[in-house]
Image (cartoon, rainbow, N blue to C red; front, side, top):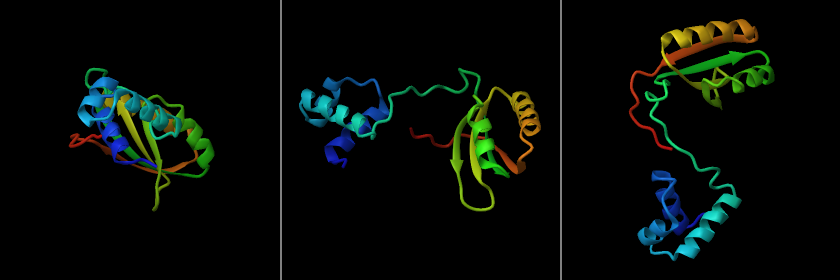
Length: 142
């Protein structure tokens, strides 16, 4: 169970995963040793899965963001193919007419077009897709 103190610690780590235990202690009023123990407990319980960095997509040539709804025949086969693609950043199973929602990042439209042409050739089990290009990022919360 995550209590109010854990939530404060998690909030600070979300803002900056490199924040020191000492700084968390100052901002929360919790002793540094207790902060450290709580972070370790949260990691062990799987509440904190990993510490990571947030990249500027433009700086790493990944600013062309595409969302795709996908409907297919063989979910396991398609899942294996999708999960192995480095441009596919997130995959969700969804309810409704389609089976999956993919979030993909590319350098530009040409890279996306090349990807989708090859992907459709490799995956004959795909019945239909709906593709949406993100025109603006209004909010991103990690």
